[in-house]
Image (cartoon, rainbow, N blue to C red; front, side):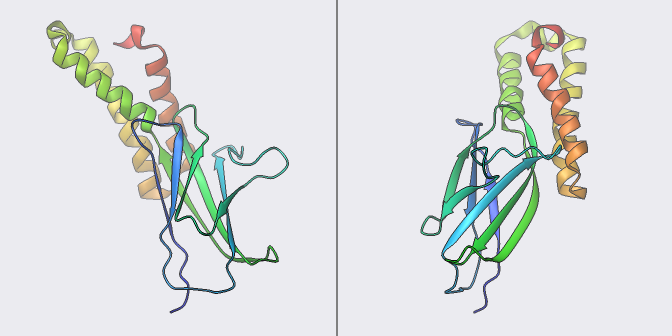
Length: 171
């Protein structure tokens, strides 16, 4: 069966800094011996690489690779190249992703706060700000899912990060 390139991306609530990329390709191509993964932000900054190259090598024997590259919510373009032993790119695939795990963790913290602090549910400012936070979180995800819009996604994520960073002002 012919090789059809594909990969998935995930984050974990326990380690939001880590992006897990999993090869979900089907078929085979005996010429493939290695992979490279590139992660860049909406402004073109690479989060992968060591300063001399813009990618991380992903061992072909490993179904997944864990990249500890995030310190905030990020909208990213992720590219995987499948290469031959001569470093010739045989296949390439690029997809856009919203990586909002820091915001999701903070949203859960806010839910816990509601459950543990009875007076917070009577605070209309709290709920107004919670609605703004949730709208920006969903907006960031939808910007990618609906139109692959990294800029709109990152703008929404930046508003989430600002509200989380200044939570005493908002919550």
